Image 1 (cartoon, rainbow, N blue to C red):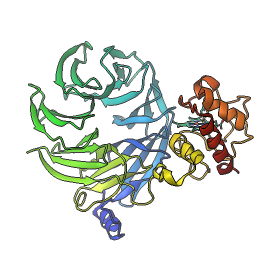
Image 2: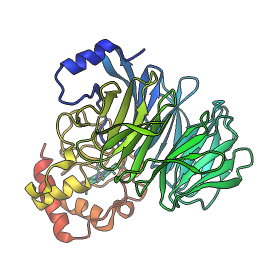
Image 3: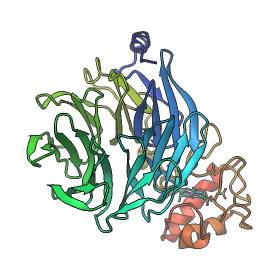
Image 4: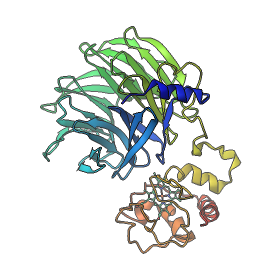
Length: 436
Ligand code: HEC
């Protein structure tokens, strides 16, 4: 399936102020990553889920959710045989059957958030890169053990395979891009020493270059053989959070912390287009559709946007064409309790039950409720069947000593609110706002 011209015309004539074609809407949290599939897309979200989408003439349609991670999903990549591979803040990776939504296998062993994922060119291995300072190669068929790479390679943010599958490139928070021999797991050389953390890499082996984006805004393409800089595309924006290469390898898309997408013509390294894609906040998810006709971008908003390349970047547009992302309300207009909630809770909890797909259960009616009892929410074993009843005292204690101490084993992240007044204000706000 292709993004039919009719659909593009339709979306444009609908009078959208932006040139955005359509949106992948339904996630309950920011979009961390997107990837193209044949005639469709995958999205990875802070809401712990992966979305499977088809991009037909009628616009994007949600096919299903892949539910199974216990924290934000950072990357998702298609794998051969109708599968997908995702990595998450829960330190694991999962191989999915995209058609049925089944988790075929869960890969455990990393001791930190897993940020990077890549599938080998022959489709037999998945590579993961983690903030625990290691990378790993996992056989996708059978249940063989992983091959571990490195120990102290810094916080690894991204990984890519060479075209022959023999070399791995690892981008690290320590400012380097290392080459690793995939067969032995040995680091063979440091291709780039950038000095500032490298967030993302994109490889065009046919043309012999690797592009990278870094925390300081550094955006460069280097020669894969000599490591020399071929092009310095650095603008005054930072950090660089996303890179994507068009299917023909001729366009490099760069997403940054200021919400811009820059499209670079990689044949002569000229900047073809540069436009503000996110009204506020960063662009940290980018992918070209399989036909190369559009680019999918995600950030703080719960929906990713699809931009037809023919019109993207003409005028200004916004990822959030409709309402502003919910946690961008002006804090000055809120009382302290509401501000606490918006800053510290709202990304994972809603106050109602409509279309709620956030990482945590709805807090509607939480006062007087037994812990772990929102129907349909997959709690951790720690909360499921817990005798705790949520009220002013227990919610206050939860954030006074921190969820990890109050309910050991919970999947709620470590977070404390040490100020007694902030806790009291938050609870007073919640009591009103969560009233059933
Ligand atoms: C990054 C995501 C995240 C943030 C931020 C977060 N929570 Fe949670 N919260 C969760 C998850 C996930 C669970 C379910 C935990 C489990 O199953 O172990 C949860 C559970 C809860 C529960 C128990 C609900 C029940 O039905 O038993 C309460 C109460 C709660 N959170 C309150 C808060 C408040 C108040 C804040 C802000 C100060 C907050 N949370 C911030 C993810 C989050």
